[in-house]
Length: 174
Image 1 (cartoon, rainbow, N blue to C red):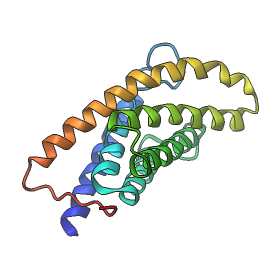
Image 2: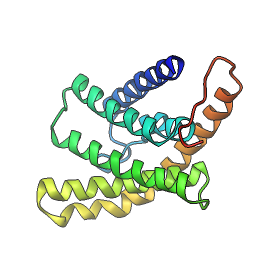
Image 3: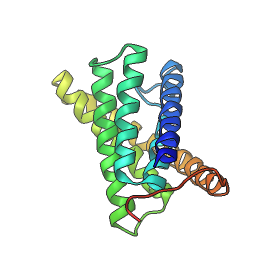
């Protein structure tokens, strides 16, 4: 149990670093808010390896701590990140644990898609105008390559970590 918590703490730290790095990068292409979703690599990895509850903890701690560190706590960016993260995580968790329809890459694509849908919905609530929906087709189009990218990285990390004797894999759903 201690080894699991230690490893999850290391993964949370890695997710925070990836979130901060991505925050400092310019916006992907010319679409406001479009990013690769680097921190979602860790979130999906934890979902797949350690289960739903560990994954939600990693997601929430990553968003809270990184928002505190970069100074965006309770700003519109924080709410967009939180909403997108929660919506995508719930969909990924359901798809991974309650259906046999999706591979890890498929789950990742779903996560990227629903992250964008959640963010557009929150942007509507914050701005009060459906004009933000103009970005949705572009963001959804970008969900495919970013979801594939994150899914491939997670598959490779899982494969690499499963070959490491010192890593304890524990999944509360097993």
